[in-house]
Structures are given as structure tokens and as C-alpha cells.
Length: 271
Image (cartoon, rainbow, N blue to C red; front, side, top):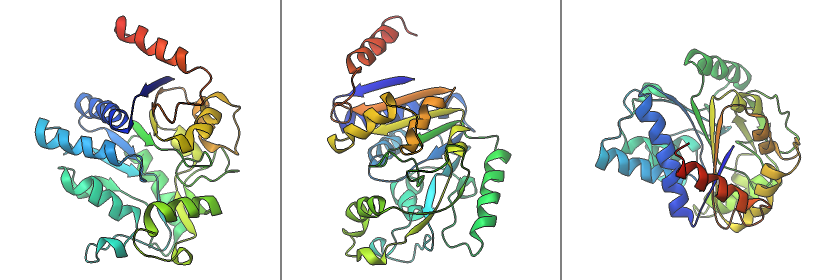
């Protein structure tokens, strides 16, 4: 596991985008797992810049998103503030700015009438695509990935979940409050890839910023493996793992000096 610490959010986002771009360049038809939320916005903006200014080509790339609220879906005819779906988020923040093909984009269908059947189908589609080459992840305030709330099985697959009060609070502050939508109007269920699904990805890139997440970052990376902090499952992954943090998010790590030393040695010896 490579733990990379950068001074601020901008530097963290740029570094993460460079990792993703590396996969796209080395394997033009790679399969990317993508995440939503405030944290990856800077990374997506940098990828858009690379596409526009450096010709980063997404024409063969396939993507699978982690999650979506149940009961909502993209409607490009609506003003943005009336559509808080993750599908809309991805369209606005990334997809409409790059040359990815619409048929290569997969996002859980929040409007499905048969959610259980859809979840089974989504798992099959990931396997049909050859699996996810690189999974981008954030980190929830209670240590969750996607919508895998505390207590989720570490072997779980794509499924419907009920959202915790903390997740509802966090997402309300980040998105719904700004749109003048009442908290009780938020969806309380979601479709999410499971922890087992995420761990099937060949490689993982997790990005976290801000002092509010410093405690949970330390628990995730240096604490015990536990279903109460579902992202601690990162300790089980056998592929290439990059965890990119800003200084604030890394501030509670006990071994931060060692992580910096390891990065410096790898850079020095080009490992």
C-alpha cells in the first residue's frame, strides 16, 4: 500500500488524476470504477484539463460508478438544483467534458422498478467488462466506501441499502442544503457496490482530504480490520493500492513520517 501525502487538496487532486491518466494511457480500453461526492471533484477537473490540453483520450474507456440514490435518476431537462442524482453529478463534473462514449458509462439505475434484479445485472456487467482495472474511492465520515454503511459485510455485493443518519446529514450539507431541498425530502435508500465487489477491482485509488476525516483515516489505515469501518477492508486488497491524502487528512496517522520516507525512497530509486 502506497500512502502519499500532499500539502493541500489541489496537489492531492492533481496527483490522483495523474494516477488515473496513467492507467488510461497504458490501457486505452481500461475499466474505471468511479466515485461521487465533494472529494473527487478536483480530480475530475484535472482529468478534464488533461483531456482538453493534453489530449487524454477516453474514447475506449469504460466506467462503473459505485452508487446511486434509490428513487432518483438523471434528467437533463431539469435544472441542476432539482436533480441531485449521482448520475447528474457525473455528467456535470466529468462525462460531458470528455470524449467518453455514452454506451461505455454504467451508473446504478436509481429509477429501476426491480432493484434486486438490477443489482444482479450490475455485477454481471462488471464481470463481462473484464473487471475493474482501477477503482477510485473516497471515504465517508464514518469510514464507509460507497454506501456500505457501518456493519456491512466485508464480502457484500451490489445491493440496496438503508442510509445512516450520519450519511444523510453529510450528504444533506454537501448537496441538498445548497439546493434548498429539505432534509426529509432526501432519498433514504441507495444502490451501492458491495465491499466484496470493490475488493475485486485489480487496483485501488483512495483519496481523502480535510481535518474532519483525519480520525477515520487513521482508523481505516492503521486500525483493526472491522465491518464498523468498511473502508478498513483496504487492508485485505492484494493489488496495487494508492492512498492519496492532504496534510489535514493525514494529521492523525501515527506512521506518517514513515510513509513520506517510503515515497522518497521509491522516487529516489525509481521503484
